[in-house]
Length: 123
Image (tube, rainbow, N blue to C red; front, side, top):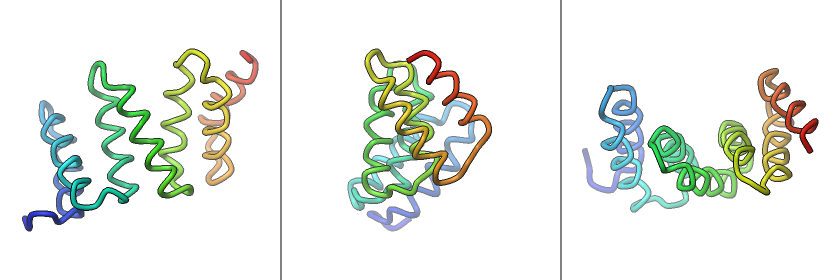
């Protein structure tokens, strides 16, 4: 792999995530890629997904998904993941709903709609 090749690190990280016990290695690959290409929204989304699967790293996941949607506002999965995560953070219900609404507007999904309906009832 060529050092600094963000796409290669992304691909390796994606592959490592699928192997049991290799999530820390996947995170390291995503972080290495972000050093060379910090504005790569897909990397931020994938790193957020990996952090979300790591105990105690949900705040880091939220920050990565925020970076992903800031860099690529049409990245549906980042909006949806961010909305789902924010729904569990005290005081963030309006932001959670806004992120889920953004995801729905870009690509309607019945599961996201169901969550949106539940969250709106809880407001």
